[in-house]
Amino acid sequence: MGPMAWVDIIVFFLLFALFVYVFVSVPITNLHKIYLAFHFSMMLWPFCQFVIKTTDNAQLQLFYVQLAFINMTLLALGWLLFTLFLTGHSKFLRRKISLLIYVPVILVTLSAIFNPKSMFVQPVHGGYVQRAYGPLFWVISAIFIGYLIVSLYFMYLALKSEQVSRIKKPVIQMRKGILVMSAFIFMDIFLNVVFPLPIPVIPGLTSLGILLSACFFVIAIRRYKVFDIVTIAHQDIIDTLILGILVLDDNETVVEINQSLSPYIQLEIGDRFDIGTFLLQEDPISEVDMFLEAYRERPQERNEIEVKYNNINFRHIKIHAAPIMVSHTMVGRILTFQDTSELHRLIDETNFQNEVLQLRNQSLIGIQHELFQTNQKLELMAITDSLTGCYNRHFLTQQLEHEVMKNMKYQIPFALFLLDIDFFKSVNDNYGHLAGDEVICNTVEIINKSLRQSDILARYGGEEFIIYLPNTNQDQAYHIAERVKQAVESNKVFVQNVEFPLSITVSMGFLAIHEFNKEISNNPKTILNEMFESVDKALYQAKNEGRNRIVSIVG
Image (cartoon, rainbow, N blue to C red):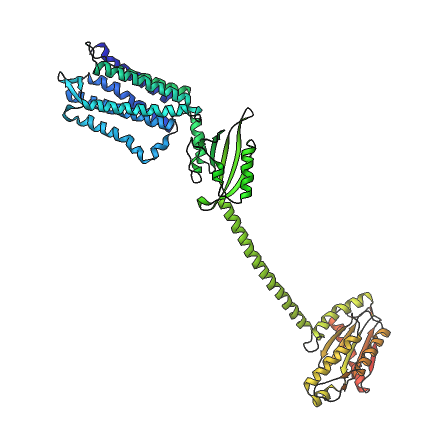
């Protein structure tokens, strides 16, 4: 091997040194891994060109030639794919037409491997160190050039656009690399294939082009931070946010858009965004008009609106627009889109549950009111006489147990009446029990009218009634007793099926207590029993003396 044969291996080691430099000097992200794989493929060309010259085996030489050209086409494809990602045109890779990008690579690979009728490459002097190229070589070259032209076209679009100033310098650096590599490749083809000179083949031209392009690319990585981890993290962060984020320039053109926005708006970087069209069908119209007026007339103010977007299953979307200010100059806007449908659903569900609870509360209040009224009725039934409606003996006994002890303690005079309807048995015998009940009820009504509001009337049993007069001295008690007796005597009771009214009288035992013995028992039941016994004796005496009279006992 002559001295020029070592050019390719020197280029290989230099490319390897750049590979190690990138690996050591920058944080390794997934994008760096992709680049390192790409860089490794660049190293294959000079390596294959070198090893061809190290063997006399024609089959091995052919293998290395095939591998070199397949790798070169893959290298061109790699340039194109990376260009699409770098310039923001990766959307083309998501379309069905993107399959056409890989078809030429498949054709090149098949042509290089099978070399039908030596139409790709032919040996010279029995080996492939010096070789002649057939028509398939030119097809492969055309495909390679096509990839480079498409890559340069997308770079041109990126440099022409005003939306990608952040990547312009890396794109320019990358374009320089492609142009330099292309120049050396074309020089290699023209000098060694199309118009071969009388001197031996000039080695290493394509390898030098690859090396120089790699240098440009490494400069872009280091100086312009093409794979800057902060930028990558920034994009990853906004893509993982729940909020849809849309960044517009001062011409309302999309500069940045995150993945969370895709359910609401189908936009790509470089598209123009018309918020009026987005809100055109929303409701209420008045709120939309106010928002659009503020958005257009006062762009430096923050604005917010919540709409019900009909195109996505009637979801509630809150849109917030904020200006991007640089040195007090507005250079664009940031729009955030927040899906508040779940919040509205929870609010609606809460309101519904509140309505249900209110209905249940109203029902419970109604039931509680019914229970209260029923309890009142039960309490009243427990303390009143079912026939006359006045208090029963049990209630009066409970009341007197408390009242008597209080009266004893504070020396308060009081009185008790025990009265009995005279000849009541004859009323039942002569006119029936219904007439007797009518007489009892009518008599109770007359008695109640003769008593004070503080006095308590209770049915003692049968036709007997007891009256408690609180805070009443003897003279007052006797006066009330006379009033009750006269009121009953003067009353005429009209009974059904009886032609003439009935005259009723009552006999009354009267006990008035105004002097208190300090040695009296402290047991209220004992005191009451003694009082009831005394007043009952007085009533018995009134009956024996001829009825319709009052017999008093002073305690």
